[in-house]
Amino acid sequence: MTVVAAYLYQNGQRMRAVSIDERVDCARERSEFVWIGLANPTADELRRLQTAYDLHPLAVEDALKADQLPKIDIYGDQLFVVARTAHIGEGEIAYGETAMFVGHSHIISVRHGSARAHSTLRAELEAVPARLVHGVDYVLHAILDFIVDGYLPLVETVEDEVLAMERHTIDSFLGRDEITRIFNLRRELTRFQRVLVPMNEVATKLVNVDLPCIDPETRPYFNDVRDHVRRVQTMVDDLREVLVSVFEFSNLLEQQRTGVITRQLAAWAAILAVPTAIAGIYGMNFENMPELKFRYGYFIILGVISVICGILYVRFKRTKWL
Image (cartoon, rainbow, N blue to C red):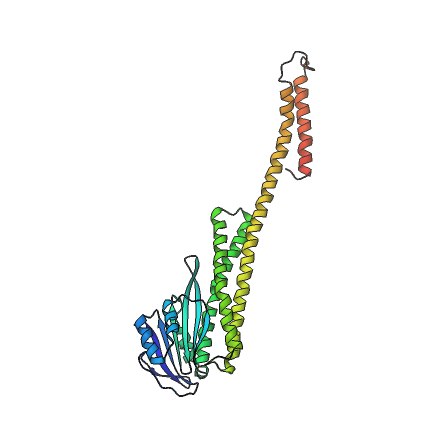
């Protein structure tokens, strides 16, 4: 059985456990509702819930497949809300899905691939009955806020890695593995942005659109979720720009270091060209060459070479080529 928790709540208090086959007739008051949580349910379990709570078959099919982007679908007087979870797994962003069936007196959450269970969230809400009194729309807000809050540690982990790359770039060249990692991170952040955009749209609809099961008094809470999503979007955009800057900065530093080496090699080549040229002239073995029979000619040539090379060295040093 993949039912994690299934309880009836009245006036913010947990009353009793319920079965997924059991249709609980709740009052129309917001404070009385059923909250059922499932993780990786089977098709049979979802069909039993469909029968008990009149869930739409298309929504049940989407919840079973778990391959949807964040969205809100309206089926009569019920809502079907899909959110994507995300966490760092083996050096890349891994995604899960949480689908929620929301009726006036029930909320059913279906998790696939999520690294964080809702047991902690449920315990926090049950510890403050004044929050659960608000009903299913407040529970929906709490789940969405829980999912979006899980994005922050992911972004902070990537941010730490990006800043470490930035510091490393200043000290040394980026290797092939590091450049590959930059492009992988940028691709992962682009994929993550494709999840954040529809998540923002979901929160915006919950704030601005009249929807079944959503009380107008709850809209400010969903506005808070939207603000959190937008904050994460801004952080992701900034990280993508930093990754591009790190790569470009690395290229500029590499070009600058290559230019320095090229200038140094050119300067030494110019200095070494002086003795090479003189030695080449006096190595032609012609009989009539000036100073060929001069007693101190060898030492004079060495002196001339040393003076010219010294002058060139000083000039290159002043222009910072050496």
